[in-house]
Structure formats: C-alpha cells, structure tokens
Length: 105
Image 1 (tube, rainbow, N blue to C red):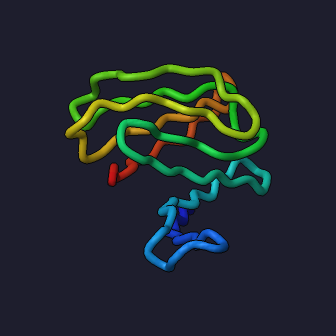
Image 2 (cartoon, rainbow, N blue to C red):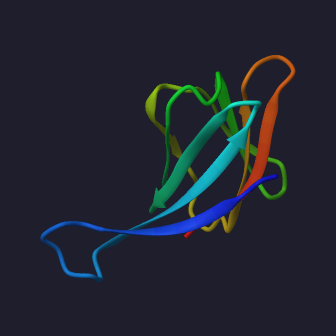
C-alpha cells in the first residue's frame, strides 16, 4: 500500500516561515525503502538510496519531460513552469516499477 506523507522541515537558525516542503513516499519492493521529493521553482529533487535504476517524469498529458539514471543521494530534474502535477515512474528493475502522481508546488 502506498503511503504519502507531507512533511515540513524547519531550518535551524531561521524563522518558522523558512520551510522546505517535501513528500515522503514509501516504496514497497519487498524491502523497506523510501524517498523524499521536493520542488522549488523549476527543479524537482528526489532524495534516497538504492530505490531504483532510473526515473521517468511526465506531465499530466503524458508528455515525457525527463528520463534519468538514479544516483544515490539526490537526483535532480528540471520541470517546466505552469505544471500542476507530474507523473513519476521509478524503474527498480525490468519487472518492478513504482508509479505515482506528484503535485508541483
């Protein structure tokens, strides 16, 4: 079962209004694994370790905007302005994919 939680991070030494909004997505491939997603402006960042081989991101009308190899730590993707939702498809291996819709802030 997919479980999506919206988290708010407060930076030490900054006012409470200085926040980073991120989505925490639990990936279930028969192992415990999760990723965090955050976007600021036209940059989407995916944080995580060993969660797949590649990621494909498309708009709500299925126009692919990026296909990237996943790197441990942070994978960054440029997104067009004005997009409200992104379809994210994470390829773990040839048979396993994890697909979800991400709301762009």
